[in-house]
Amino acid sequence: MDQRPEPQSPVRAQRLAGMRSGSRLERVLRSGRFAVTAELNPPDSADPQAVYERALVLAEVCDAINATDASGANVHMSSVGVCALLTRAGYEPVMQVSCRDRNRIAIQGDLLGAAAMGVRNVLCLTGDGVQAGDQPGAKPVFDLDSITLLRTASILRDQSRFLSGRVLETAPRFFLGGASNPFVPPYDFRPLRLAKKVQAGAEFIQTQYCFDVGRFKQFMSTIRELGLHKQAFILVGVGPLRSAKAAEWMRTHVPGVMIPDEMIRRLQGVSPAEQKREGKRICVEIIQQVREIEGVSGVHVMAYRQEELVAEIIQEAGLLPRRWQSRTRTFSERSEDD
Image (cartoon, rainbow, N blue to C red):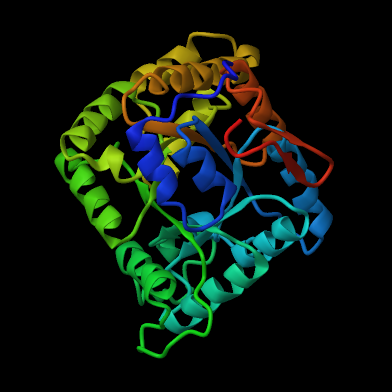
């Protein structure tokens, strides 16, 4: 990977001037580098070491680590708890905040608490419905949705006040993100939905799994027509498929995941013992293809409790070395402009 510093273009200079969170992820993106984030799937445990062990693998290859917030409406260690551990150890977290389980009072409190712990990146999500999880009898909240959550976080940060109008003593510093799914119909609505999130305050976007590069190219064509790629950084969601059977299960049971038939046929075309390796090769190929699409600023790698496989994918996709060096539990950075 070319390590030479890139020329300071007017667009890059403008984006660097917009820095306001102090986050490493924001600095990487605004400098024009291709960013890599990955999900840390929280343990079903109260042991902090389980978080540290998973984070250590991801920290070697990523610019930031997403702490999921009861994804799929299943209970795990909380996002704010994982972020507390990650910031304590010196890692760069992205705190996911779902609207499903908390009202606006609790969410605003969590955002302030996260900022106090050193969390600078926040991904605002509506959240999967409780019927998707293993406790469908739980009572959903949905006091806010992802767009109103983005507006709320922006008001805390930019206006230094709560939604009630009460003034904050110290405003949080956040790099705000939203999610997008270009792969489910109505396709023409997805860029417009993304535009609403950008208007509400989203500065980066992480997409759902991309298994259909052709569909994603069409989505990005509209994004460029709307000029949204200049207003927010697009990180494409990618991930490996364990097997053809696992791919079938994902597209049937995981909300929002679309896997084309030809992708499953490709996995079926190799022996069962080879399918996991083939799934990794597919993921690497997709990364290399989306990296060439104008307006794409990075990738977000998702592999449920397969942190070592994430590292292999990032290595084989040619995204290493990153611009910093990692130590046992902390990052040591070079200068911002290296």
